[in-house]
Length: 259
Image 1 (spheres, rainbow, N blue to C red):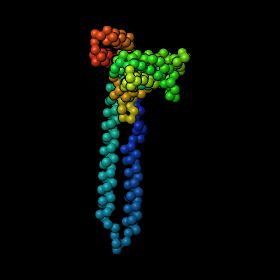
Image 2 (image 1 turned 30 degrees about the vertical axis):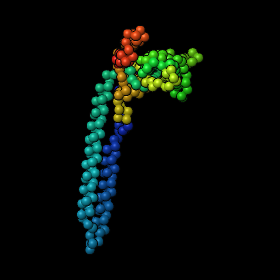
Image 3 (image 1 turned 90 degrees about the vertical axis):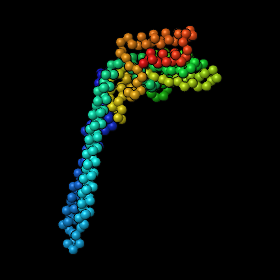
Image 4 (image 1 turned 90 degrees about the horizontal axis):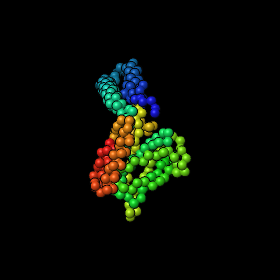
């Protein structure tokens, strides 16, 4: 596993903020204005002097602009502090196993964990694993009963060849008895390696894939959590198959167990 760390991938560079750039530009413009004003005063016609009100108005505009730039600088500082606090809070996720909405995960050492949810029973389910180039490398039938299903991929293609580590996407197609497509939701499971800020949003680096914190649906310790969760989900499915619980109860219980 990669070394745990906290990163900050903000869109504004750490060395020069937008407010600083604007302030430097304003200072240059003000210097040019003073130079121009001095030149005009030296060369004005004594019989028709320049209007001092115009100079005053321009100076007021510069002052107002400077105040706005300073306000932007203060706002940037507040945003930076807020983002730092968010990252610090999210640092508690490092080393944890999380479930999150999504369909792409990093396959490492021949292992990748996906989930998909069927809102109703399906007649046919096909699970495809797709590489970064868009090629389907693995295709097989999936479980068709309503509920949440785990799909543990062994990193092998359809011919049994172990593929290289990398990012792979899972696509699930489900059809009912009439051939109509059933909406399927997918999620992924992985260990958080680091946290950071990207485009102003807190993201978790899960096995090499950035996942917005808002997409996380569950979090747990890595030790023994997976086997316990799998056992619970299988038990719920058996209860449903035996007719002891209905479909809505199954879905609610599975989602609660997965979280």
